[in-house]
Image (tube, rainbow, N blue to C red; front, side, top):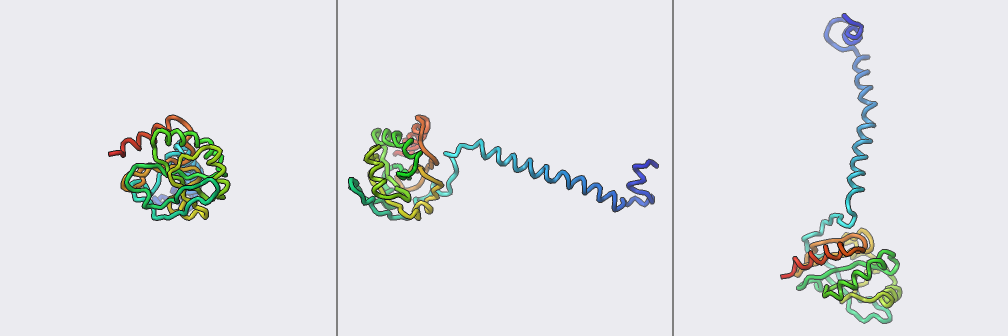
Length: 202
């Protein structure tokens, strides 16, 4: 009998010794952190390759949440507020914006372009000072049909807003059909949203 065999079954009974069992489990114990590290690394790697603008939303294909936001009361702004009932009867966009949001400035020319091309946009002013929001729109242009002031962010929570800006495509039945997270900054993103709008029109 070899030395290896003796260390595993020294008395010939076929039963491994406790020390042999501990050795086996010990080796597996060293591998466990490596396996955990690899699994976490794979998960992070997959997450980093995803486009953040396509984050899923539990509200897709569901009616917009019930909400009723007051008008943005500020100098130079003479538009009604925004409520869930306003998002019925026509395909339109709801854009969540704020004057303090740097990326909102970057995307704003693209919103102005879509408005010129006939897209109906509704504004969702998020946790903002009304006067600052009015100055923002006066400086950059106002593409919105209505603007609701979500001063405390409660409506944003109901909509599952991750951050600002975000843009939702709403169909004629008042259902959320598409969500774009982050600023719209390329012609390709504009075309993607415009294609969704065209597909939803009767």
